[in-house]
Image (cartoon, rainbow, N blue to C red):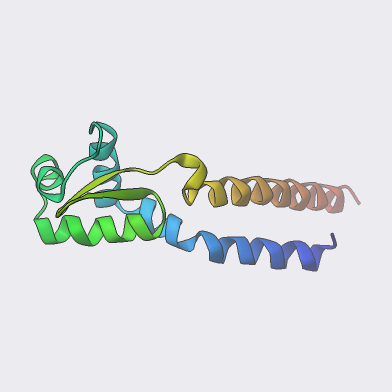
Length: 121
């Protein structure tokens, strides 16, 4: 793959990962993720997350929506109740992030080597 194709692929991967980067980059959502990691089956309801995080129910719902869109969190509906839990890692947006980080690392190594070669000339 040439350098231009490599850059385009990296750009596409960044775009694809934006929802995940946005979701996990916020301190409040990180707090919710940590709270959910301490939950038990079948998950936690908004009220319980609200109590554990000292956030309002609307704020928790807003952040859960973003985490759900990024496939970090999943919901199980039981009747009228919604239970939120950490998603299966293989189905989460983190799979995309792993690919991005791997590609980004390769790209950075190539750039570093290229710059190193140029300084030796």
